[in-house]
Length: 320
Ligand SMILES: Nc1ncnc2c1ncn2[C@@H]1O[C@H](COP(=O)(O)OP(=O)(O)OP(=O)(O)O)[C@@H](O)[C@H]1O
Ligand SMILES: [Mg+2]
Image 1: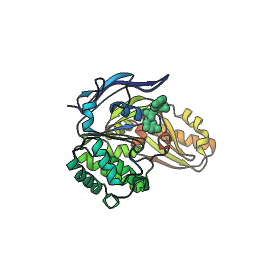
Image 2: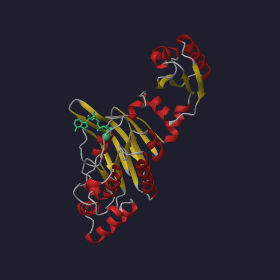
Image 3: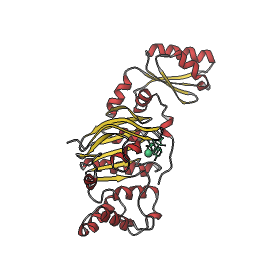
Image 4: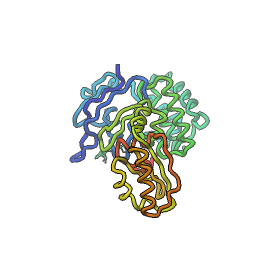
């Protein structure tokens, strides 16, 4: 059985189509990523899959249960971590877990044990009696994930697990997600961090404006970017002022400025690209400093597939 089968899922809010004809399948035990910029429909997709929002069209099977006929029974096996925490500031870490366990119908005699186990696994045991409201962002995130696991689900939905966390907290959370993966949990996560998707996901669906534009393994996505060269050049002068000219010189390539003086050229015949870069530099007196041929990154694949700049993905968001 597939953990999830999504068929033509669509969600409209008035005249806005937030999710359009999305289809994908998730295998049991897989970590599947929904990767896309702000507003691309990631959260809306997840909300439909966990029964919080009704699709305008399409259907999905979640752990074998059809969305359209209600996934009430599937909920016993699903954990959901929303993009902002659903826990109570006034309750202690431990009481939050006990409360969630009760809500999920975990038997009274195992609640305590389960809460303690999770507090230890998430490194929060020492802080178990402190109020949730006093926790740092990283600790809040960790406890919110722990709370989604109290009933020992088979399928976990994580909406932007590391947004707003510092590098160290984000890394420890990613390690934790890897652990859950190795224990056989099926995980659907959303992210707009390319390296996060690359690091954590077995497969990635790239969403742009509510549509899936690619589904593949991180390696497969990178290979698709390899068809053609990736050349990075740096200049002494403000080369990005002449973006239009450089793009016109390289019609078969995608030109992306990393900053004012560094550019990445995706695709095209390498020697031709090189020639044009030299001509471009001379033409505007930019002082070409370095030219490197690079191995494509997931970023390159993303740019190539979506036509979006990666700066769009880097947009920071608030988060609890
Ligand atoms: N309840 C709602 N009513 C009206 N429009 C909505 C509603 N929920 C989402 N939208 C719109 O649907 C689109 C997709 O939103 P969604 O939250 O799914 O994006 P996202 O990919 O999760 O973005 P982010 O990275 O910012 O979390 C957006 O244009 C959003 O404004
Ligand atoms: Mg979202």
